[in-house]
Length: 200
Ligand code: ZN
Image 1 (cartoon, protein in one colour):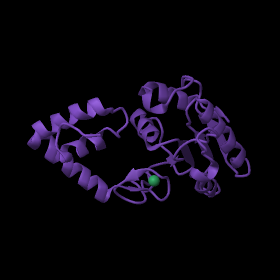
Image 2 (tube, helix red, strand yellow):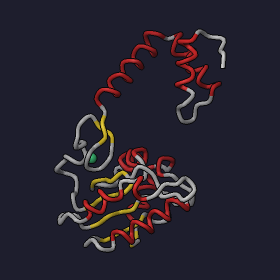
Image 3 (cartoon, helix red, strand yellow):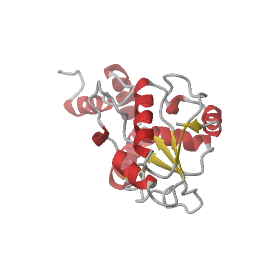
Image 4 (tube, protein in one colour):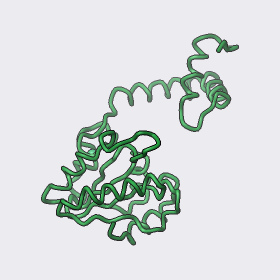
């Protein structure tokens, strides 16, 4: 696609357009805003991207993103090591942390089982979860997965796989709206759903 801007600017627009929630039109507007505010936006953003690319890594224990491995949550002795909360993606982990209602640790699956998208258990971090659930200090695994078909299929599958481990398996209560992604819920709803969790 030949653009009206030069190739460097078209490349910037093309990359921004790949971000979630961005289309070509909003990518053009964002590019223009960046280029017009070189010192306030463009250069600090370039710097932040460079630092993130260099320093942020995936936690080898829980799958979250941090500059340290294990991440700050996994290495925090104040966090309850007997509780593991399973989330779909890091965004859901951030939502749980914003709600400040959970003092255990996390496990990021990296997606949901989906026959449609060809996502099987091997594409997710299921094996490491089963291994962690087998550690003696772990007493409960909370499945904080979305109330969608794929979310519930995944929760059911995990509950079966975890049946062999000596842990309680619970799910968030139905404060979570059907079809709800955790990222979109307000903090109070998450806290309430966590308090009222039930056996899976
Ligand atoms: Zn971690």
